[in-house]
Every structure is written in structure tokens, then in C-alpha cells.
Length: 100
Image (tube, rainbow, N blue to C red; front, side):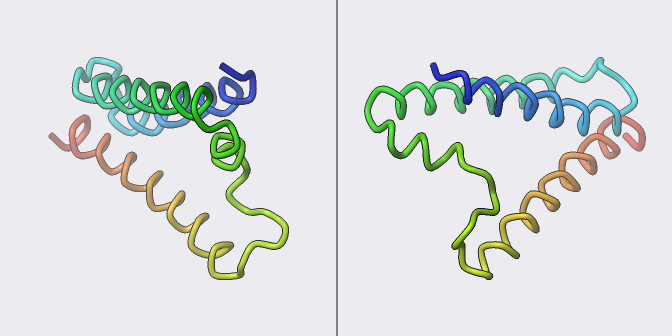
């Protein structure tokens, strides 16, 4: 596996785990651990498959959300989706951990 994949997926795992567990206020939340391991396990499987079968697609997938020459609509929608994902993960943590 390419080092750039680890550089991207490692911090992404930490951010997602932080969003879930900090908002929940506990690490004792088996459903969140299952979500993280399923999400990143499947992500690793897809990444390994792409690395083996279609490295060009993997290179494109590893590029930043906002790129030079990208249409304006993409520059608006991609960061918006990232913010919504972060909000959703935090909301899951508050719902399951703090508000029950």
C-alpha cells in the first residue's frame, strides 16, 4: 500500500473517532467502534483493490477535495459535504452518548 494512503487514512480515522467519541463523552461505545472498523476496513479493502487493479483511479481518489481547474460547483459542494459529515458524526455521538 502506498504511503500516501496511510497519510490520508490515518488522520481521517483519528478525526472521525474524535468526532464520535468526544461528542459522546466516552470511549465505551461499541457501535461507534464497529462503525469505525467497518468503514475503514472496507476503505482499506477498496484501496488495496484499486492499488492492484487501477492505480490511476487510486491516485485521483487520493487528491484533495479542492483542486486547481475544478468546476466552481465542485468547490462548493465537496467541502459542504465534508462539513455535513462531521456534523452528522458529532450528532451521532451526542445522541448515543450524552443524550441517550
